[in-house]
Length: 224
Image 1 (cartoon, rainbow, N blue to C red):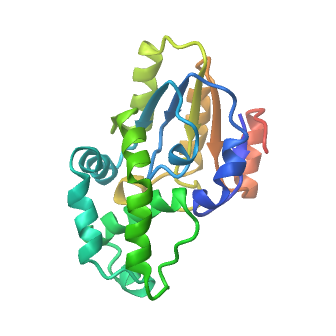
Image 2: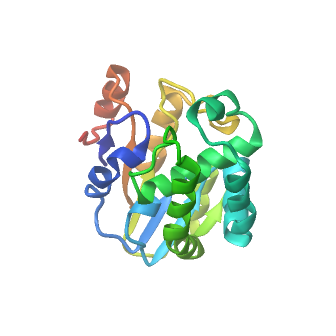
């Protein structure tokens, strides 16, 4: 296991993170979010993606079934940082931020502060939407509590080279979505103990807080 020590947007460090991954036939993510790692890595033969957030699950369900509905929201939205931040709890802007996060994985050239931000955003979607659609269609999505998700996987996994990437809410902070709140050091330790039960290679992203490091060393885990 490797500890990935960056707090914040994963897409900024995605190449460094992905380079740590071993070769695998089955790729699993237990805390999918908006997929900053998944959309930046090569597709595995099999891909299983999970997030306990009902918003995230429904968002990707619509993105797979009716992407034009979500893209229409962009054409109607004002997409400057200040406005988005002031309205971040409203569903329209939750959708917008999620779409931005997905497509920022494909390109780092767009900035919301630019005067032509909407045009740049739409150009980026036109460029990458086929790739995003293909990758979504090559994955199985679920929405389960992480421990229930892992136990179900363990009963059905017959693939020899399985790799699990876990990016839980940081144990010293709380996630923005309601479904992510309540994660702490005890939760992280329970997750580590659970993962060590299975014959899977895995990596966990965490913040390099001293308490987190102490916990990882306690369980003899490799920190990168």
